[in-house]
Length: 305
Image (cartoon, rainbow, N blue to C red):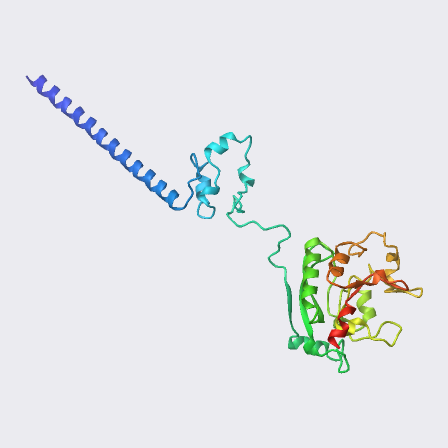
């Protein structure tokens, strides 16, 4: 009789354990179904019903707050691909897989600046009595101070400064932005006042500059620089030659325009085209002299007088 009671008790225990397992399994199944329904609802609410298959792996979930779910690679897509380098994967949305950051467009530089402004008080003080004098044909109010990013000879981006007439300021910004994007190199870009307004010293330093109240070298005629309508670029590499003389002297070797070097200007290159398309002319096209560094917009002279 005791054996029968023990067997009954053991059978009851096994039955209880089996029933508990079945109930637990049902609860887990219901929870998984609820999660699946919630995920489906979230996907549909985001309009990402073009996604098929499971998301590739947990790493993709980690960046899902930065990358649209519809952009992720699915298991089906991965299975059909010959090879996938997850570390270098870039989605069509323009986001990088590893960081979720928006990737930069070609030639885009967050630090590049191309800005025109009325002459700041500090600049007025700097140029007064140097590149600008009371007898100058243009007033201080007619001039604009430009901040220009350029590519240095060392391949690094640098901030330059320049003063031009307000009538050409926007065109000059566009031209130099194009030169920067094209990778044209400029050694330095400072106001000529850094050299006491002395054009010879500025040229010898291979300095790119614009406005300077002065005459054409060897004459009594005002230069287009005196109106803020001329720009000299890399003078050593692009010298001025007239009457057997070369300015600056350091540029003699570059009279041979096939001579290799950084920052040379040649007919029909990106520098030449950039200025010509804006209505400027190039000193390298002159007949009686050659001024390879020089661009000017003489056509606007009558509009500012």
